[in-house]
Length: 451
Ligand SMILES: Nc1ncnc2c1ncn2[C@@H]1O[C@H](COP(=O)(O)OP(=O)(O)OP(=O)(O)O)[C@@H](O)[C@H]1O
Ligand SMILES: [Mg+2]
Image 1: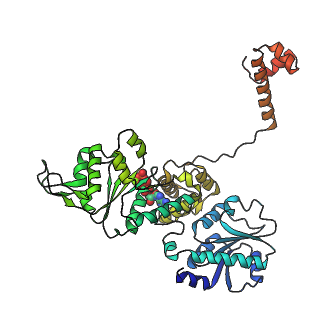
Image 2: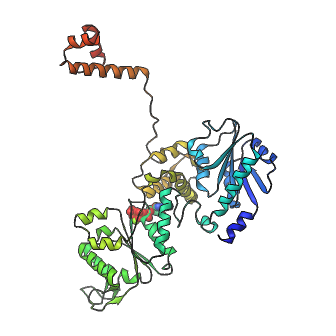
Image 3: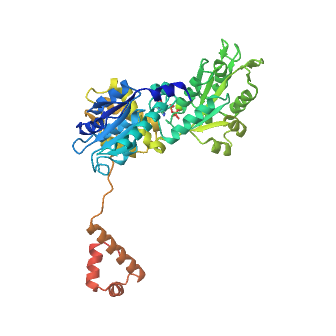
């Protein structure tokens, strides 16, 4: 265990209490908890500021029957910071609408008035210990993620752990995932955090270069190698010496180039076009693809041996819809980053906007989220960004059918089934259903049943 952790654990214990009315804060103060120092604030903005200034503090949110916190803003506050949270509630509020399930998830524990001194001292001690464990150096970079990425979901934590492992081994990496999921971001993170950080990061998009040019882009050429080759040109592999070569859209690499790349990965040497000299190059290759390479292998469009070689260390980034719980945090982070470009009156997201973002499928993943939020922040004339500002489909609450609708549906179903059973014979069907022929005809007419 590192000593800074022990120091933080033994250090002063501080809490920021967000309480609109102050009554719950008074109840907490009245307990006279030893070694604890609490600061009360009455707005979400003030809580954000206080916690930013005091990174070691834990957060407490008071829920009373009078002050209703704006849900979206509170969700953002809870989601964004690395702070550990405890909820304090007035009697009977735990099961009320004021504390929605999306809020509940963010709290370590809940205490209702009257506060139980023993129990709350235990919770706070535990939460303080947990807060002290958070690695401070990383947290300043980004509260809710790792390696400069945003996301605290289980699948993103898995990605951070995988990146961690990949850092210690100098082998090729293959990054999969839909468009906009952060493949390039991960590639850059691996470069920046590995022993190759002081070397170059050279990116090349295999899908964006004419196949006839790829050879010289990758391997370079000698002067006079072909018409127009007036100078020697260093290829991307050589340019990335001692660093990382990022091959984006590797699935688009023509088959013959795949063979050349494989040869390079095996013997770590290249030959410039127009030369016979083999040059030793020390490069780590990170490749990315948004297509299923295994299928490309099965279809004969991608070499199996190259696929295995690249995929020794493979990681697949989750689509945004597979980690919806990260959406508030991502949206808030983007919002903070873009604030300077925003219309001055824009303060945040409306609750409906937050729900719409959580509901939407995000085919363009994080990139689409960034684009929509950026655009909304510039164009909106609202204080809180709306569903329309984001250009998202409105969230429709599931409609409960009326009794009348239910009855009509049942009638239609019974009559249709019965008619079918009796070969559309109305007299027989009427007899079986216990109504007159006239009544049945009227019903057929009203329910628009086609005979
Ligand atoms: N987890 C994340 N946290 C913060 N920003 C992210 C995250 N994932 C992606 N982004 C941002 O989203 C944008 C798209 O990411 P990136 O270019 O790495 O995606 P990609 O997977 O390479 O997409 P494509 O397949 O379309 O090239 C970038 O602006 C990147 O910074
Ligand atoms: Mg990319």
